[in-house]
Image 1: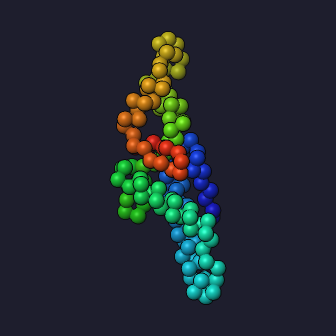
Image 2: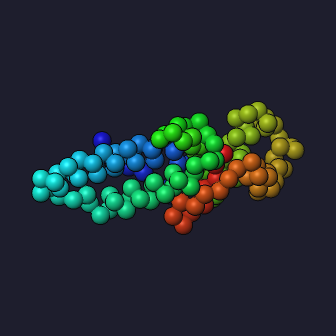
Image 3: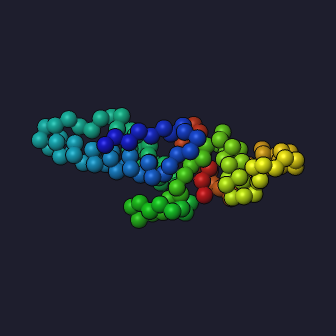
Length: 135
């Protein structure tokens, strides 16, 4: 199995990161065994990807969460900074804070400010050149 990760997605599921780390570690271990028998070493791209994902998981340690891996707890989702305003709107609708059929004053909410205030309950983490939010 080859889990494809988009580390630029609006929302990244940490379980997908964990699954990919498991796959790459297994691949590394299998290829290490093959190298002992003159097999091919682990691909440089795979080595770099594994290092990047393990570093990301290390950054996420201590942030709490609902997903356990390697004796540590991790948050379930990373929300892109560029998507966070839409995420705040969806969250407000999903928890019943906004009536989908309502008009004024719900149509006058400053969603930029609402998203900014919601971020106070979140921690940021960098994934490559992008910032993601999690809690």
